[in-house]
Length: 368
Ligand SMILES: *Cc1c(COP(=O)(O)O)cnc(C)c1O
Figure (cartoon, rainbow, N blue to C red):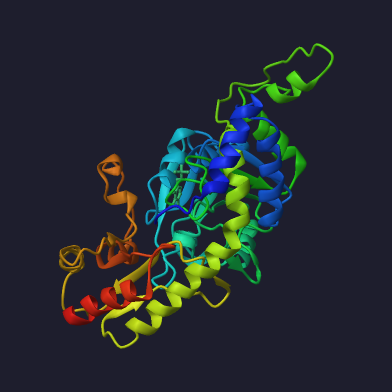
């Protein structure tokens, strides 16, 4: 992933600096409104990262020590870490082989009476089946948090991923489609959740610093609960507003590049590239391929690609295999372990040419 940043972003950041207002202010407010509208949500609350957004989502839901929160192990480690930030216990669910996402069945398999929430991930941009999982979670009386870090521009049932989410957390890290350097957003449909999230990201204050400065009267703020400083800056939001305008074009280009990979790799036996699920479309943030009967191991494929100057990466990590989670003994996670062992992510960025893709496909074909 190479971030797609241009002169417009540089200008926007410079304007924010020249305005003299660099902390959370009017540009953050505009970015929140425009982002929420773009993903079909009622309210956006900008934060410093998706990780802090996930943390606040669990605080919003009053998840506490003793509670269990089901997460996929097959995700960036921040998904599981957020559960530990509130003192709760992450419980790892397995995933579907085609999408890399949890399903109603894999979540139900690890559900207990202590389960208070599920964080489901739209992994690498491939949406999970929101309709099915929301319905099941409602039936179980369990809250559903959407880790939409990778999902800007993906669609589910014809609508933007995140539409109708109780709470969804987004990332603007440079490894995602849309970037503000670092940054994130929490989207929610109801105004009272948005108000609590605004308070939680800003030290628990009942009035934002921006509103206090804008007021002509002296405003005495109160601190209603112990909270955090998870704010985004106006410099970041200025960049985010420009990036948001680029999103449809970025997604269209990635889908074209993915389609070319699909046709170039169609005749290579033992390689299964990621595709759109039946119910939605991925933004192809990650173009991963699963080795399925390929004669060479994943690590050897990575070495062969590197020797040809191609920087592919290992597939998505599995949190339960990392030292940070060595104290956890999860139930069987066969699909997670298979995907993390046998998949790799091919280069896909806005500078990738058709010739690059032919070269990459040619190296893979030579190994098959
Ligand atoms: C990148 C990512 C995160 C963390 O996002 P940050 O903005 O870097 O904190 C969380 N979850 C998933 C699935 C991710 O891919």
